[in-house]
Image 1 (tube, rainbow, N blue to C red):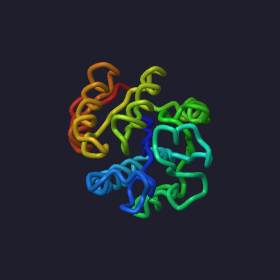
Image 2 (cartoon, rainbow, N blue to C red):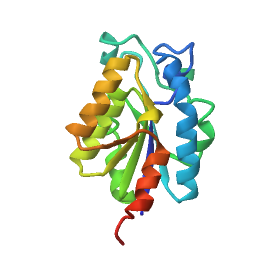
Image 3 (cartoon, rainbow, N blue to C red):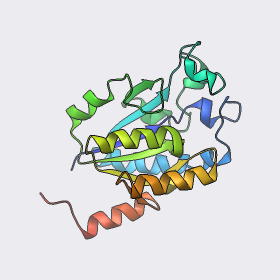
Image 4 (cartoon, one colour):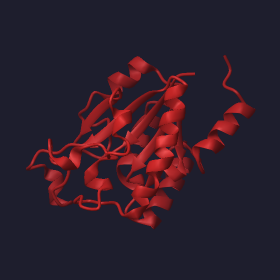
Length: 190
């Protein structure tokens, strides 16, 4: 089985308390579950894709959000606790919520042809959800470990998880270990 693990926007602009759009303490809590997923899946041969918000200084998104993650600034650096996993990963610099918009993500996924995409990161109701929508629109099976995603707003986070499961057809599981157990119980046909 070919697996891709996507790590959405786990960069210092969102994960560092000094970051412009620091997502709060909950973002620090998802780092360890993401590390565990990356370690286990890389050992199983998975490919890893990190996305980064990467904006021009005059990006029109700054009409809605304060300037953040400006190209080449410290805010665009992958969180130090995850940076070692980014060394041999595919890095997608993006300027909009979906990691597909105006990037080469689609070409990478076509080449990798994954059987499943495990999605982690921040923000559940924004960049995670819009990327998952585009993954599902391309018929990729998606698994979202709920303990490996978070957002600024707990209510919006809960809504997004439900929406991605009920409307987009992603498989939302409490954690990675739960998903692994279900894979052992019903293995993917050869």
